[in-house]
Image 1 (cartoon, one colour):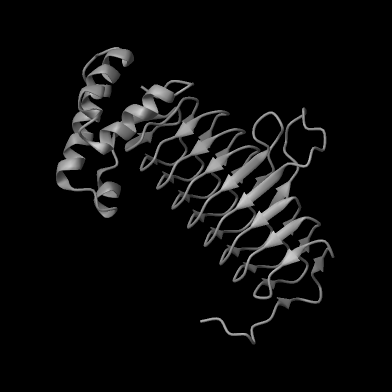
Image 2: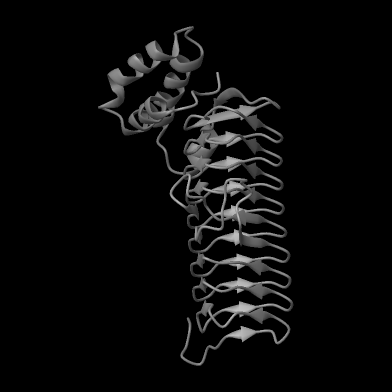
Length: 264
């Protein structure tokens, strides 16, 4: 429990801009650089040699490990120094040498990372990405610009996601997958060019999905991938039960809103 006696622990070798807004309960390690227009919430711990540029908002109780570079300008030739942002939520673990870029005016101007994510070393989150909650991204995962990663996703090491792709909730990618199309909710993918390999049944069990719900999701997978139906016809079949079962409604909503189509 925090007490009134808690104070900032900013190493004397850190460089913190006078325009940064740092809560009293924040630790900053040696040789870290915190720029102007950066705000950091209470309980966040920043290791040595971290660079955070603004505008950037970081919430509470995050752990940021050495050599991360957060809030840097987007790697986009169209970027013209507009005041875009990086927003990071609460209770995230961000391991060594991760790079998260700010957004661009070609989108909403914000790169956003939610809450309770476990982000391992060397992960890159490019401009305008939206990462949800309870996501695990293993080492060297790379998101290109405008990627959306929904809640409870697990991305294996060296996963690569093309611009504007979406990764659906409760899905799973094996090591070294490359996505140029969307990954639907609940689906496991493997292969250098990602291919569907069944549903993430173990992950669903761990998150409290009932046996009946998992069975319905497995049946939906068979309709989508094993029935030889055209995608439009498979969606029509799934829509028949979506009103009765929330987990199928999530899948249908994803499929109907997909702009890049799905891996098949």
